[in-house]
Amino acid sequence: MQWSVVASPNPSTRRNELYSVSARAANDIWAVGYYFDDITVFEDPLIEHWDGTAWTAFPHQNFCAQTACGVLFGVAAVAANNVWAVGEITMGAGTPLIAHWDGVKWSASSNPPLAARYLNGVSGTGMAAPIAVGTRDLNASTAIERYGPPQFPMKGPTGR
Image 1 (cartoon, rainbow, N blue to C red):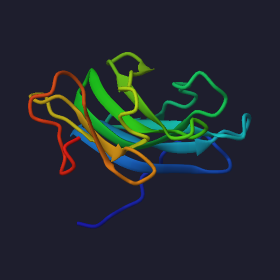
Image 2: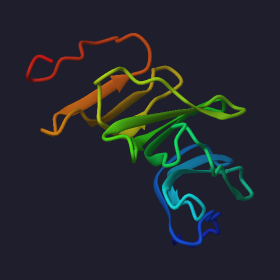
Image 3: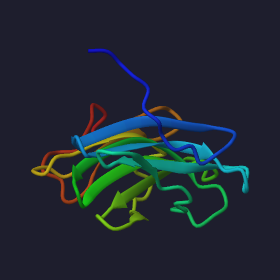
């Protein structure tokens, strides 16, 4: 066995980057990152899906309701209708970005106030709620967020 290059969509002529990948099956793989929008000249989330035959891009996902949206750093494919992606709103002064695929469309998901500045990774299974991790503040405190009610204490070494 050896690695080989697979063709993938590139919505920008300037810059396209993928940071994370999650596979549920050989025909259900998601990858996320960002692309440099040639029209707005800002970074926008890049989401791509493999259906077993080809990669399809989901460009122009304006989760942020502003010109410059953001970058996605992590993705977790929990089920065909339950995929989570996390990152940051690039023009939001440290505002996390959480997106959800419901099997039909991508949409922004709410974020707890002051919970995190950036979210870098997300994981989940069909049996457990997704958990996202990142940075809480400028002092680089860790942030852990869970979708749904907590099932375990969320206190760290500082008692927060």
